[in-house]
Each structure stands twice: as structure tokens, then as C-alpha cells.
Image (cartoon, rainbow, N blue to C red):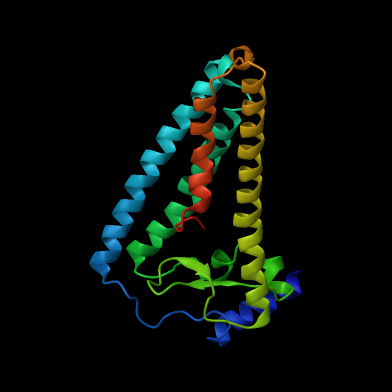
Length: 205
């Protein structure tokens, strides 16, 4: 692994193709500062609000049920993004360009070592994203894998769950036993819509 890291670092320092930084950011420094201010504000609000949510679950044991596990998961995910992703992007915006180097831009060095995908700064120069400039078969397969794992599979599971809930409700209704279901289905649906909306959003990484 040390040899692989050394080769990647050498490639980053000596070849613009391995990590093509944009020569000039698409944003002015003023625009970078505005984005940084937004990220800092959003990060503080997100961290504080999600920590409060988690503290509520710690304090009130009755809230810890299967349905609310979705909310707990979302809160932990938001804390991770706000605590790691936002600060790195905000610092880079204040700097005017990505300041964490090749290693900081790569999500996992092992993925790069086997030649499957990689990350590079986007046109703003201050945020890392999938290196869309590279259109070889490796990047195409990686993109398809990301779409399948992060979007198609979760969405399919959600639709299956909705279908199962619908079938169950219809069965109870047909048997005139709907009143015996000890849960509020509308609340269940509202909670489930949150991750479904997040996963289907075009802004979702």
C-alpha cells in the first residue's frame, strides 16, 4: 500500500492528467466567500439541530422504535456531512481552491490503486467530485455502479415497502379489521418519504 501511495503522490505532483486541477476557478473570490459563509452557517445549523434530535432519542426511550430508526440514521448522516464535508469545502472556498491535495480528494486510496474511478476538483476548483473528464470504461462502470447502489437499489426497496404496506392495508380493510392496526399509517408514510425524497434529489451525492 505504501508503494501504491507513493506512485499516486508522484503522479499527482508530476502529471496534470492524474489530477487535473482547473487553471482558473469559475467563481470569483467574492463568490467563493459567499459559498463559504453559506456552508459555515448551514454546517452550524445542521450540526446543532441534529445533535438536539439525537439527544431527544437518548432522553426519551419511547422514541426508540423501528420507524424512528430512519430519523436517527438521517441525523447521523447529516452530522457526518456537516462535520466533515462542509468544513473542508468551506476552507477551500476561503482559500479559493481545493487545499487538501490529492489524498484529501480521493475518498479511498485503495479504489484508485486498482484503477477504478477517482476524484478531481469541479469547475469551481474548491470542491471535489467524480472526475467526469475521464470517460474510459473504468469510469463508466464506476458511474453505473454508483447509480445502481446509491439510487436504483434503495429506490426499489422503498417502492417494495410501499407496495407491501398498501397490500397489508387493503387486506385489513377487506376483512374489516383496519381499526385493529395499532399505528398511524399517515405518520409512517410521512417518515418514509423523507429518505425517499433525499435519495431521489439531483443534489444527492
